[in-house]
Length: 440
Image (cartoon, rainbow, N blue to C red; front, side, top):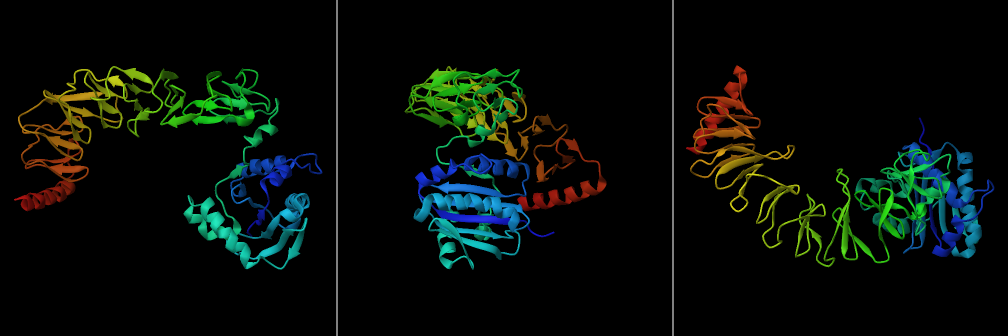
């Protein structure tokens, strides 16, 4: 099967003329912007039809790549788009349009046109200057996709991109009451309004005042347009002031708003915006120098004595918390993190399974410090694998060998269970003997 025919373009054009081009009418009564947006729809449904249309305002360069044809006749409607641009811009548009069978193998062009003097003029091939200009542009544009660098000549992008400077959600103009389009979460649009709660307009609730052309997610389940923040079907804050995103929270003025995607409901509180920060990257504890929150629910703790122990686990002067919920029975002042989910306070040894709900009490502390080795923990009298105590295990001779195996002087263990396979027992016992000899 032959490679699809592709069109690549690199055109210098002033931003004002680029904006005018997007509004130019086509013979089928659509605008150029509608035609480009339809190409994105097609590419979205057919991942093998690669599509890029990116205007770089700082360099005033349009980069275009589309892979969806079989021959030059298929490319004719796309070439007409660039003829329209060349005619509109006159002497101010300069660059190249190339048609060829790439990026998957051969790189030879089947046709190359130079953009200039108000037209597309066919030429033998790309000049060396064309690629010299393109390489640094693509290096900047696809620095996050280094594995695609070898396809630079073809403007090869696996990622679907259609971004027009300050034009909002261009695809909204193609939505109709009979064909609503989905934003994400439970939001849809009919091209004029935003609705929430259903994929059907008849049962969805209209989000009053929301502008569909500038409607987008900010953080978690909080969305915005140019004027408001929204949660579900209601505005929650005006955007007369600048906002910033801190973790999953959105700070506007002296308030922080949060509606996390894990299912927690909406919450907000007054904060010191200059000092408000997320205390741990892996959880939703926040502070502003005077107060502590979890998910914008205030905790009765002071930042001076609040400490993050591990993801989701923290302690203050008054309690130990797991994802903002008090862990009953644990002495916060004496709690020590031993590692791998094991903790100890002045009276108890504890285990916290990150997939479980709360701390599990393993037993009262024995004399001496417990020793954690991977998922196993032992003190002077007992051995545990996670929260499971190993019956009859000898802590003095217990030694992890190679996960999930461990052994002591009497038994071989697979996690918390005694191993019964003779071959496995022999192999683990031999490894345990070597470790014991090395320790001596």
